Length: 427
Ligand code: EPU
Image (cartoon, rainbow, N blue to C red; front, top):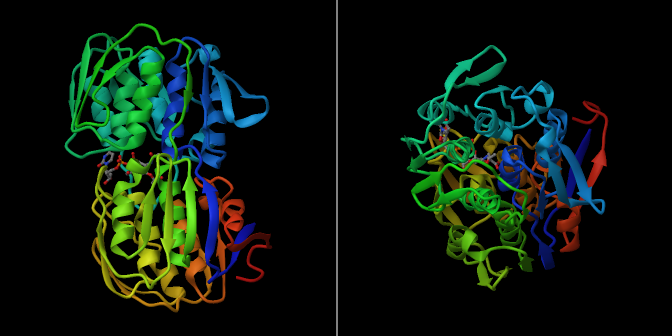
């Protein structure tokens, strides 16, 4: 077992580069299943979730080759995928986004049999809206004890209305509909940058998708999807996490390879804390010299403040002067990591979907767990700001979504290292 050991209070200086977006990559890779020719995907993040979804595709019969041995560029030939059944249960159960295989296989074969997805389980994560979209297009959905089965005689373009805005259901509806005859309209679609990225990728293969990034996405089904070379957008949440890390630790860091517009809501909230954020074409500079000020945050679907930055901001605001209020409005509950922050001295009271944070500047190192990907990122941020040494266990969650986090943070002056330990010896 490995853990991160962080000695806090080092200010951060220098430059850091952001990798490709996890939540775009994990949808775009399954989307290749729909292609009738090989595709090249570039700017892939080197993270666990990407290697798992690539392994699943290989297991299904796709040929997966890294170009010149570079793991950020992959050629995927899906022509060897001849079955709608996914049999690698363990791999599928390792990640949430394996549910995109449902839409992709339904779109390709008119049927799908996929094991239940796994992934970060900070709260219940239903897929009823995904199934509703498939049913609207004409599929019958059966929930079996260990699998989800989709069957259809004939799929047809229709109007899909979501009463809750869902990233995954919007993506899955696009995947299922892209080759379906007629016109599909997705009403109350999610608008996250990765929705637009998936639509751009599918359009690069010859799909006809309009309106991605707005509430209404219109899709005209096409018969074939051809080869393409496509570069994934930078990871909004990885960028936001490093912005919050600099704000927490103090310092002056240029965060490169980002799309500043994707960071608008994060930038606005950081500015509320007194952190300086300068925007350039493809970079942001974050400067924090003075004491942080408290602020209130409410998570919302894009373009609102992203829920995937909520734990990192709660960690940050734990070190700010005054009382902050963070309201979680996307997930029913996403505060299970707060007791871990309390071990470091954070003063936070939860009340339903609201966290009241009484900031203090003297968080102290402790032994904590990364309960999930973003909760783990929050522990790293708190540890960078805290006095003394923090040991974070269960780092496999963090490594699902952050490429080379140790190398990146060390390069800007953080004292962070990975150590291997025997379970239960020092816990
Ligand atoms: N919802 C339903 N029914 C559904 C689907 C969702 O009621 O069928 C509800 C959820 O319970 C939640 C809300 O809709 O309250 C939004 O969920 P959404 O479907 O948008 O989430 P998701 O697609 O499963 C993706 C990201 C999450 C991120 C959310 C919200 C991926 C692989 N995951 O999940 O990312 O929190 O969107 O932005 O794209 C992460 O990266 O750490 C992560 C958890």
